[in-house]
Length: 352
Image 1 (cartoon, one colour):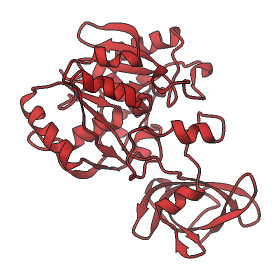
Image 2 (tube, rainbow, N blue to C red):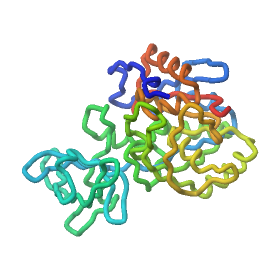
Image 3 (spheres, rainbow, N blue to C red):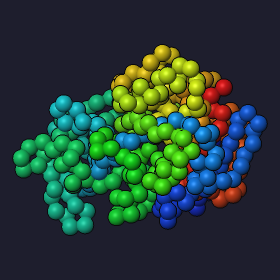
Image 4 (cartoon, one colour):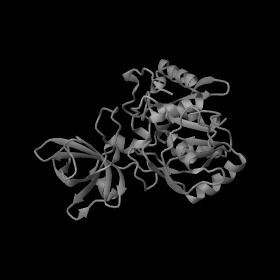
């Protein structure tokens, strides 16, 4: 299929720049590919929309302060987005790439004060235009915990304001783990409060997190004209033993419905399930597109995604391209808020 089939016009005013006042205050578009119905509800209605006893599978990864602002030799500005830790540094996306080639150095600076916080050294060029870098403090190489103290929250480029206090709180899920190296939030999970999770549990729903370390595979735009030519960037995942033990009998016998909270959770489940067991960890380049048949989740909760993105392609795989385009057109007509801080969609009967 051609990338153009997944294009739609989104008025810029519908791109949410800030979260809703309350985490669970978002609107919810409920779409059923079986009867092709589209309904308007709210995130707070989720406990009455999912079947009692549903297994809810969120991504509990921690978003790291992975964005480093740089001052290059000579005074020019730059930026590094750290994607994952390597044995000898970090995999990073750097800008300007033409200036930050192997052998170059730059200072990590506080944009408000100009204070030098660390040194970034570009060690090697990697595939896909990436770099291997080291981030150095007075005592040597910094790890993720040290980077968290000097970096900034990696808000997506369509959010125009610099990361601030509001984003520190709201660009993380309330159920996040202390571990992980995500460089983008699993945005469907941002809607959940402790109260909403408790209401789901009151309905007999169980909470079993997985962890996908969100990187370029999730958010890098497609450039190939044909979907068959797009290669996903590799992302790591982990499935805790308790989650695997709870999900495996259900996946084998289909005794209870399963809700994937977000596309990253769905891709993790699909990558890990071999028909008999869940791998406890691994990496994936899975690209879910029309023609793919789900083997795990029965429902998907997800935010609204960019035109011509792999995530809108995923939604189209579950709904069919025609219904996906119709649902997004309805959301645009009704002024739903889009992207990371926006409203959400619940897809019912996702697994044929």
